[in-house]
Amino acid sequence: MSRLRSIVRTFGPAVEVVGTEEYRPARPGPGEVAVRMLLAAVNPSDLVTISGAYASRTVLPFVPGFEGVGVVEETGPDVRDLRPGQRVLPLGSAGAWQQTKVTDGRWCLPVRPELSDEQAATAYINPLTAHLMVRQHVVAAGAELVVVNAAASTIGRMLIRMLNRAGIRPIAVVRHPRGLAALAGAGLTAAVCTADRAAGEAVRELTGGRGADVVLDAVGGAEGAELGRALATGGALVHYGLLSGRPLPADLPAARPDVRLVLFRLRDWVHRVHTTDPDRLTEALAEVYELVLDGTAASQVAGVYPLSAVRRALLRDAEPGRPGKVLLRLTG
Ligand SMILES: NC(=O)c1ccc[n+]([C@@H]2O[C@H](COP(=O)([O-])OP(=O)(O)OC[C@H]3O[C@@H](n4cnc5c(N)ncnc54)[C@H](OP(=O)(O)O)[C@@H]3O)[C@@H](O)[C@H]2O)c1
Image 1 (cartoon, rainbow, N blue to C red):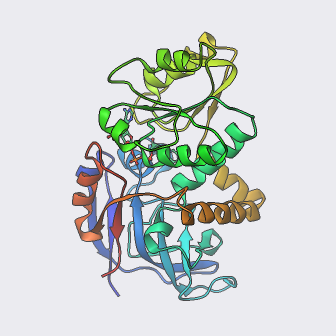
Image 2 (image 1 turned 135 degrees about the vertical axis):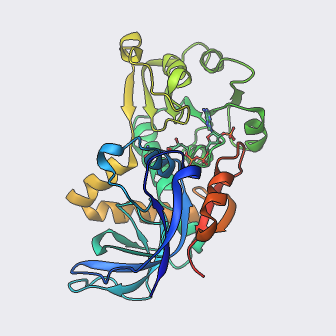
């Protein structure tokens, strides 16, 4: 039976290069599973991949989408742990933006029944990243003075709630006054808008001149570096995103040899533990499901679009101030 999928044939801006086409999914081979996708998220990592930033490891044409939920439709030979009708997150590869994803059964992680499809479709990338960063780089380090950059983003808000659970009221940094409004009521020491004042100077002042223990930065460029310079001796700049489109300046380590620069990429952690100790991934996802269900790792949804309207979805995603995630509906 013919199905619909999104397709990228040339790298470029997502709104320009993502198209759709009909296709006939392959039957699952040994160890494989055909997953009928229900909902998929649009994430910055999808847009970056579509732009060609990872061209060396992305083969054209490809179906984008690193996050989504679906139902097992058919299992291939040698698949014992999954059964048709089971809801799963098919992780570990792109391809969520299509109606049927045929993939390695070992990468299909079961979803708790209490999660709605919307919760499940957004339960992986941001929640697991935030959970791991807080656990590994804040709680384990005994950090107290924490800065969250791009704090009004979906993951920024999750980080704030996770830090609050750990007894920490972070300093939030946003680029626009609408971010301050979006964070009203959040458990913060202070919220700083970089349109009003320099973030580094504000952090030094708010920490009594001491500097921060940890900066969680998804912006990069000059602003990420400025926050890195506002760390206390022994502090850590945990850099996990490039919303500015610019890398951290190369001279940052020389300027602050007394702080640590940590590059966090969920993909690296997930692929490493999946190879060495897959139970750790299952356990971490179970922890994250709990946090999604109690609201700590919940994502707001800004809009749900049918796959046939993928460009409209991507235009919505590109709107500044969009309150939450854009999702693609893959059924119907
Ligand atoms: N390393 C990893 O493994 C990993 C995993 C998950 C997420 N991330 C990264 O986390 C970041 C946020 O992801 P998300 O899903 O939470 O994004 P999102 O919900 O789509 O939100 C994007 C946010 O970024 C803000 N923003 C855009 N450009 C900015 C800039 N130049 N400076 C400051 N803020 C800017 C927007 O602010 P406005 O409201 O003003 O428009 C918006 O709040 C992305 O860079 C993503 O790649 C990385």
